[in-house]
Length: 162
Ligand SMILES: [Zn+2]
Image (cartoon, rainbow, N blue to C red; front, side, top):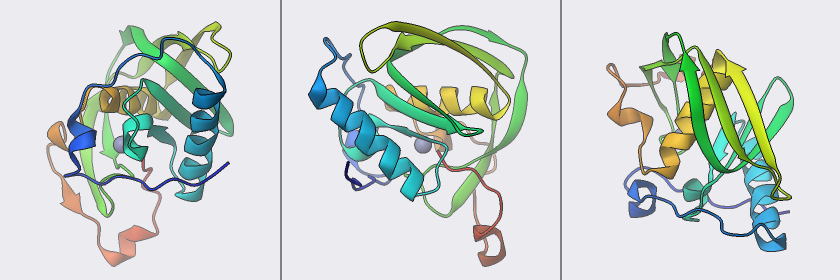
């Protein structure tokens, strides 16, 4: 496994729509492993492939010590609403409030190409939505209504970066 460079806002790769993975293989499994290592080393709760410069529909999310590897993910249903603070590893030092569904069900393929379905609530639902947006070139800053720079006191706080 290897830690990859995280692209930051302004990098054109983050604005592109990613292509689906047509067949899971060792190449993509290695990318998933690298994404997980990169996410963990940056203390993030999620990472999408374009954030490491790869224009494929691959996402990793880790919430409550459960790792979700999503290949070609799609949201199949949403429920309710939540409004809260969000950050992004590609927009370091900033946070903003974003409206998201409270509960989200995602279907995807796993690392072996087998179909999986996950339902997440709260932070997990928020992370799924945030990461899937990245696959369509959408960064949360375009949805946040009070984007602000984090002060030094806040840098160490509980902001979750995705
Ligand atoms: Zn992000």
